[in-house]
Every structure is written in structure tokens, then in C-alpha cells.
Image (tube, rainbow, N blue to C red; front, side, top):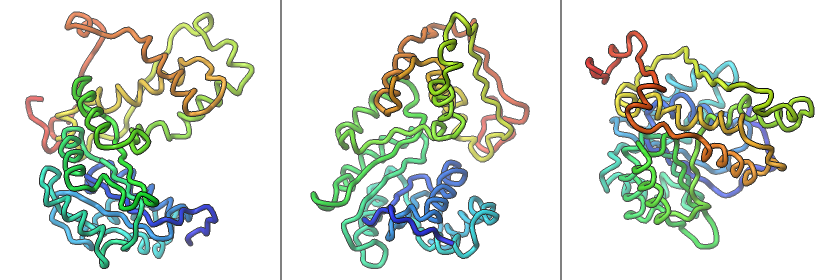
Amino acid sequence: MITKNKDRISIPTTFIIFGATGDLTRRKLAGSLLNLYCKGLMPDNFQVMAVSRRDYTDQQFRDFIYENSLKDLEYKFSKNDISDFLTKITYIKGYFSEESTYEKIKKHLSSNAGGLNICDNKLYYLAVPPKYYLDIFKNLSKSGLTLSCSPESGWTRVLVEKPFGRDIGTAIKLDRMLGKLFREEQIFRIDHYLAKDTIQNILFFRFSNIIFDPVWNNNYIEKIEIKLLEDLDIGTRGSFYENIGALRDVGQNHMLQMLALIAMENPKSLSAEKIREERTKVLRSLVVIDGPRDIAKMVTRGQYKGYREHKDVDRNS
């Protein structure tokens, strides 16, 4: 049963997901959107526009999402609620580098049949590897999709997932491109790991506890070890891992963010700005591993047995 929520947003909203058939959408986004819908936290009028390269109809994509994402949530949500949610999803086949894809999106947003036919909020969610970001940014801008349909109502936002770029050079290039196309308040750089309850509880455990806060320093703590242990393999993400690897996927984001939360000084207030300032101080204080000699001494790389058997993985990887 859908919960009635008095605080739900009244302005119609469209979620446009690039990479809708990928791992992130299947494992995280679809279930999260369903959860918000069933809790009554979605706008009265909303739609999810799924964009990917596979040759699906609307119904074929809904079946795909149900089988790969939502079927396992029937213990939590009713079949009727899941079915109602799936009707909110439409599918657009297209390549991120082709202008025709963005014309399809634009046409769908403005059409009486597919769109909401009203000035709505638009959230572009980039659930794709970083190599596609530049094409998507450029084409969103060129097609006019970065603009709000009205100066009085209807916001437009873009949400980019980690990893943001392949290295510091590409990250700076992408960030500059984002800055040209969107205002800072429109940009959301997301590390979904920070939303986990355990991660958020680190702050409260440290700074709301008079027992631990006074002794949380180098006089009493000899070292910090962060271990990210997985019980799942890469699944269908062979191509992604061949280009990105585990260090870019979870090291420079998930693990460094955990380190920052553990090592940061007391922010004095739990506002986003103060927490960000203290986390940044930790990251700036880290010693950079620089050069082949340091890397060979301080880094061990490897693959689990069976990694090379996955689809799209080079047998000589």
C-alpha cells in the first residue's frame, strides 16, 4: 500500500537515467525509486525515463527491471504497488554520443502522450562509466535539455556517480565542463556509499559520545585499517572493470571517504558545510604515493580466481 505523505513534492518530476540497463540501475536505483514511491515520497506526478542502448520496448524494459531488480522486493512491497510503479517507466533506446538520442528525450518530455505536459522538475542521473560523461554533458547542452522550461518553476539538475573521471586530469576537465553547463547548485556529485547507515553512524558514534571523542587521536590509536571485503564477483561488469579497476571504483571514493570520517576533527556542528570542511582537511593531509618505486613498495595488486572468465574481460588482463 502506498503511504500518504503530507510532505510529498507537488511539482511533477521526471527522472532521466542514462545507463538504465546497467549494474547501478539494477542493483541500486530501481529499488530505491520503488522504495520512495511506496513511502509516498515521490511527487504525485512523476515518471522515470530510462535511456540505454539495448533494443527494448517500454514493456520489455519494465519486464527486465522487474526480473532483475524488483522481483526480489516482493517480500517488502505488494505486487500491485510494484506494478503501479512500473507503469511510470518509459524506455528510450539511444547512444550517448548521438544527438538523435537527446532529441528523442526532448520530444518525449514535451509530448502530451509521454511527458507530463507541464513545466516539471528534471533530474539527469548518469549511471554510466566516466568515459561517457563528456558526450552526455555536451549533448544535453546542445539540445537545450540543461535549461529549465520556465524561469519561475521547474528545476533542472544533474547527478553524477563515482568514479568521477579516470584520473586527476580527466576529473578536472569534466568538472570544468559541468561548471560551464550547470550552476553549482544544480550539480550533485554522489558517492552512494555515504548514504549507508553504518557510515553515517560513524559521525554520531564519534562526536556524540563523551567516552570516545577525547581519546580519538594519535595518542591512543596506533593505526587505522580499512578493509572493504566483497562476497560478490563483478557479475556483468567486465567491460567496466577492465577500464576502471577496483581502485578507481571503490578506493578513491568509498574508502577515502570512510578514512576522512574516521580521521577528521570534530566539525563542531553536523551541518553539511562543516563536515565537508573537516573531511577535506584530512584528504589534503594525506601523503601522495608518487612514482613507480613508491607504488611498488606500498601497493599490492591482484585479481581473484575466475576474474578472467567473465564476459568482456581480456584473457591476458
